[in-house]
Length: 384
Image 1 (cartoon, one colour):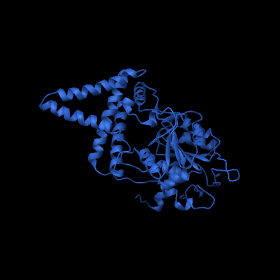
Image 2 (spheres, rainbow, N blue to C red):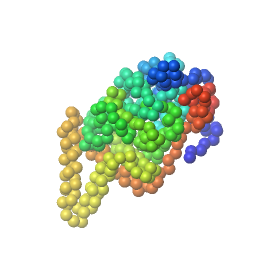
Image 3 (cartoon, rainbow, N blue to C red):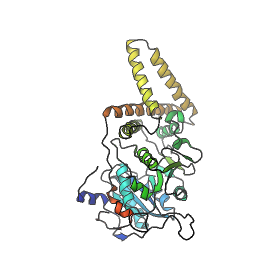
Image 4 (spheres, one colour):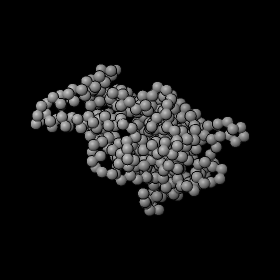
């Protein structure tokens, strides 16, 4: 459990963008008179840290839908101009709000933003991603109370290294066969990139949890969503493109944390969400064992393991449309960092997992007659 003082909660939930205002009750997701499904009110939530280069696009994408009643951006202490850009949008459109995220992490920021959101539906956007103009509106059109929906995770590069990483992200041999990455038609999956879902259910299952690795909040959240009877679906018509890290070092750290995160899920939930993460872990173990054997004995096992892996890496590189040598390096980095991180996480023992930021959304909010979504009067220094 995460405990904090009243003063700390005040600082976590303090609005820094506008004076107090009264939020109007949301529209219900179904017309009472006709029984016809109508569009819900939607809130876009974003957790950012130093995303000045792309935050304008993210906010403009969110505001393109008339069904979006607010865009809540939780900033983790940006120093690159992100805050001033968000404030510029807030000065022109009252739907845009900026809040502080002292914990800096994605999970805490998203929970804080969800706690202050108005809409019946939450749509998560990421500051490191670009979107089709109709991404938000298409997400809203898929509304079902028990459905969490998102588009495939695609990569797009802007420099030599990030382009190579994006190439690797599109190949199942490099990144695995997860359907949330490679689906070509709508289908139910175990997890999805970003996502849109009912705010009331988000609150009911406890929002995002924070893991020591700073990752896997999506996989963990959607596992709990499905355990509670919900459906997770990927729809390729929801088009977005993630921007990979621009340097080898940043990517190594990222995939090392991804691997550690999957190990944390094993410790917390007693199992992996799927068998897919085992492949890089087995590779690292096989390379390590065969390498030791090669030092004290015959090198044949190492040659077989390394040779088989090299063939797979080369196959991905040859299928890449460009940057083939860098693509091979990116694939190798993904496999080794992820597998190493998973083993490190398993050997580190049970992680300390907390839920941060959900104090703004309470059970009392959900109990108000005639409302499926928490509504309250919010002031600039009032804990919500």
